[in-house]
Image 1: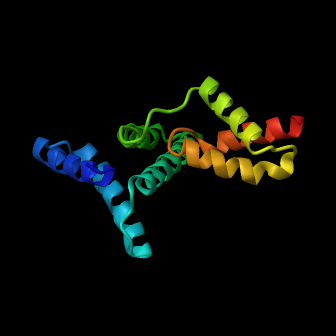
Image 2: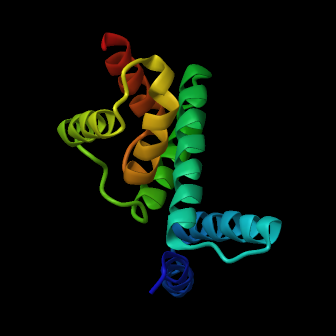
Amino acid sequence: MSLKGQITEDMKSAMKAGEKDRLKVVRLMLAAIKQIEVDTRSELDDAAVLSVLDKMVKQRRDSVEQFVKGHREDLAAIERDEISVLETYLPEQLSADELAAMIDEVIQASNAGSIRDMGKVMGQLKAKAAGRADMGAVGAVVKERLSAL
């Protein structure tokens, strides 16, 4: 079953079980997926759905940060709950060691020799680590490694 199909089935089961908070998040996911499908006039595959979900998690993390700065812990808690529901659909995150090994491998494979090759390295990493790592943090590590070359 596709990831989109799994989310749809989870919406139905959340409705039947009366899980209002989970149902709200699942509906938000389906709405975001549907919006992109309408905009692009195409059916999203699992990789594209993962990209949408990853973006939703990133938006909520940014919101949590802003709510904490604004001393609104109640709203930050709601966002954290939404993140936990969204993360159930994302693949397992890469450990720091796995990520470092993947970065080194891509740098070697692409023959990157300076910071000018960052785009080439990030393009390959994005394909390999999609949904499994925060690409902002990955970019910082890649920049650090390429600057040291």
